[in-house]
Length: 407
Image 1 (spheres, rainbow, N blue to C red):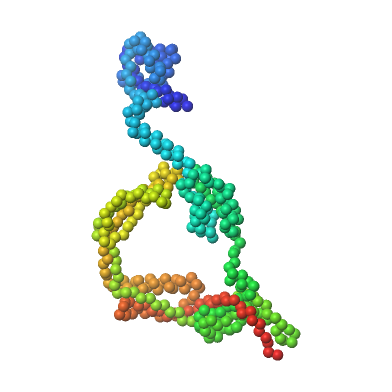
Image 2: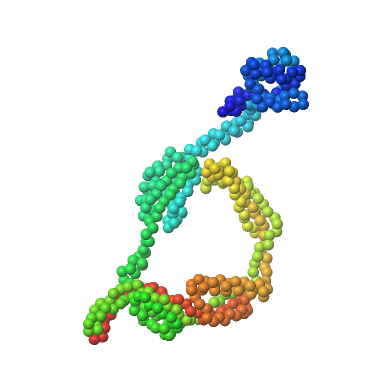
């Protein structure tokens, strides 16, 4: 607080030299003239004195026969005359302060948190339809009504909260954690499901947990064959079927079959070769609707564009969407190259490894494999045949038709 008072009133840094600087300081103390930051040097003393007290030193200087020289002027009284000479700077400073103050009246950023099944795009379209957007005035925003509208229009939302944090609108929502069943899932729950095979082959293992097995280990089956029936019969005492209980068939079934892989690679390919010529186009972007660019001549015949964008720290802290950046147009030409045998084998093997890793993720066991790389009129070809043990069992809705037993 004392330093602020000194800066407001102004003070001087002076140098005292001559016959008796020590007597000079004693007389100042006797007359209640405050001196601070006193330092001794080879010629005398350096110290600070308030601007008001400086005008009272004349009699003390004459009495002690000392010499006082002003070294530095500090504080507001000396700053104002300088500012009067720099009117453009002062005007710019005042405009900047006015801009920052007026910016606090608006919403410059909208952030949504807690949405997992409801996409951010859906929420943004909803907010736009309710005229909630960046650049709107804060006094136009009815937070209570907005929270109710979100809960009303999105049935998944069980709780919502909206608040203003500076110039940012924060919307937090909580979705219903209970699973939402599709029409197909609801139908399966009521009618039951069967398991059918997606491929043809030989069953090598089968463990049924629910349902009626319709195939056995060692059977050769075709694609689409029913493996486990979800319609479980209930028998009368005489052995006839009284009714069927619908259930979801469940089993672990491993099928042995041949899986094929085929991929091609052309002999030639086209790659970009940059010429080194570039053109830059600076721009300023405000929000999502305005972008000011410096006009440039037409770019090259073939080029790509690289965008670099940054936001000044002051606008980032205020959440004001003002960005600066540039577009860089880079000229290139398309050059044809031809794959060597080593390059072709490497690329085809990479495609094969992606295929094999996909099988591994699905729990497929590879028993035997036969892979060949050949050539054709159009390019390189990799062809592989794999003897695999693969989990099968696709769920389909159980046929609700009633079966009758032979009497």
